[in-house]
Image 1: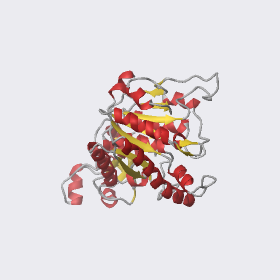
Image 2: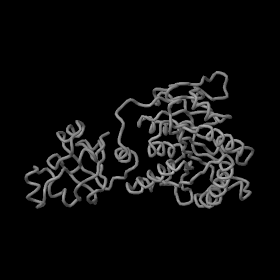
Image 3: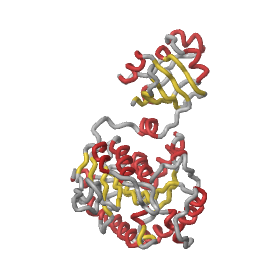
Image 4: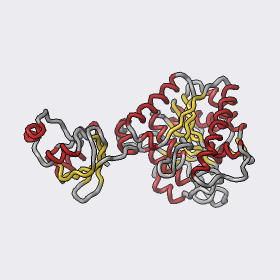
Length: 365
């Protein structure tokens, strides 16, 4: 565990609204200490995922309470986002650090091209020694397409940037067996089973946030499934320095030991939205689970309207989704060749045969 912390070169750090709040305003002392830590960690590459746009907007507009409707939230976030970045830029500049703002939505990342563009931009900023400050694009996001909480955004950003460590700062300071302030509660310093830890997690009661410990653990589940360790740590002075020196403060969640997914397969599994459904027989189901490509002979049914290079869901005979993949055929073509042998396919379509879904463009659950 100590080695994970010391050896982490690229670190994503998530800062929630509660962490940024101090006496109803932005905690500039905390941001200043964070920037000083980053300045000292010259051999590290830091990416910040920051909430706080609505909090900053409430402060800038002198509102008495957090807005309730989605339209009000978006409008307040538009004001707050500019104000928040101004604060980050001013404080980080004092330490000779340059920041770059990235606004994301899950809707955008569901499209493969935009996912790659976001990935390339983040990596280029890091190469340029710029510190990316990422936030969900609250001004255009709606309730149906938001990440739900920036904990999940941070998990996806850690995958996008191929991070070595995800640090989620929390007012609780870690995962406890009960209420953190209770004397009978014990801090769980190491977590190997998130499912077990979820038994102790609660939802958020934050004035400005939307998450909670359950949200943090669910997001951590995404990161550790991609072999990225996670630490849920407290807001305290020099926290980033302590973690980088291998000091465990909070709860450390071990990465899973399964084979690491490629970024393409990670996108397929977590973010891609299927345009159609392909039902396969038991033989094809076994072949897919054995790492083979999907062939026409194993297809029993085709549903939906989709075209070449679209993502489709793959179902077994019981109707259970067993995977997703990028198809090489349109729905019309597949309906013509489903259940057919490879030699028959070439005659029907009058072109050289290819797999319906190549194993490199396929993820099996």
